[in-house]
Image (cartoon, rainbow over all chains, first blue to last red):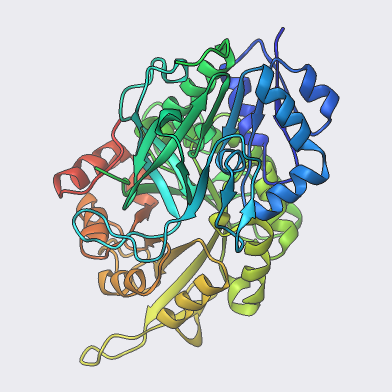
Length: 215
Length: 258
């Protein structure tokens, strides 16, 4: 039986993510933990995250999760979600500038308070709700998910990857941004698959079956 | 194409049971929050809001279990309101699987609570519920004030200023209810909705007064709401969420229909 470890570093509720995995990966054991030994032994690893990035990175480092992530990211299917995606970038503008884990080059930027859509309508921040994700690749995690499906987003900062080649999915909210990035065995999404009904559950199921090969 | 406007069915829950007589054809237990939430999920609801109307604090623990159970089976965002008064109340609901909590009266009596909760858990999960009533005469420029206790007690606080203040303190979203329209089925107070939506940077959910699907569409097109919340028109089987989305789409509103 495979094990999926959801890294718990004290930022936010992981109940829904765990339940969503239990729902789609019936024969997997889902563990929610920050213990290095358990995470390193798991077959797959999920890095979630909500709230302010500075607090997230601080807790990740305090608990030694950064070292565990560094090791897992080299070796097994790895999924970052929301702030868990942002944490993988080099740097975030949030909290007057926060150094992140730097597994992907690129920055996390603020949407700004003067954002408009193509019709000139003012856009609210946070970007909250169901938006379309343009799949940029045939990545295994997109399997059986229709092109341009909607996923649930809630965030005020967005990822701008330095290399376009890692962008697996793009979304538009006043400006285009990376909704999903991936390289080798690592995939990360800005939206919340555990809250995105069918499309989100399909992505989690795909992750639970993914061998870690990229596109 | 872009962000869809959201439709949010709202369920009143008393001591763990859905009340106000939800009526679906062929539902086994119309009082079961899980079953009702699942129905709305199947119809395409974009989120679900639970309003805990349980009177005693002791019985409120029941709501935590309701949220846990629903969050284990329904994978769309859940908001919980009613009786959220302390940081610990917020934490318990989020840990149970709620994505957002809605703070109402507690914000009026202790605005700092909004700041505290937002700093602790992030603005994305803090909804401030505003109950507003028009206080200006018909021939005057419209002015609305915050009311508490189900619209009975005036506070003297201007609704627009209050909304701005709540956002400053860390509200990530505003749930705006017109106490003049609530329960009337005459439609949202569109002037109020528009005034608040224009005044704040965060999304606004319109609520109070929905009697037809056209009312939902008007909340977005004229009220500039980012989401619309309704209870009775969905509960009594008059209309499904899918029908609401069809009407909204016809009005040129972008909706999630998949």
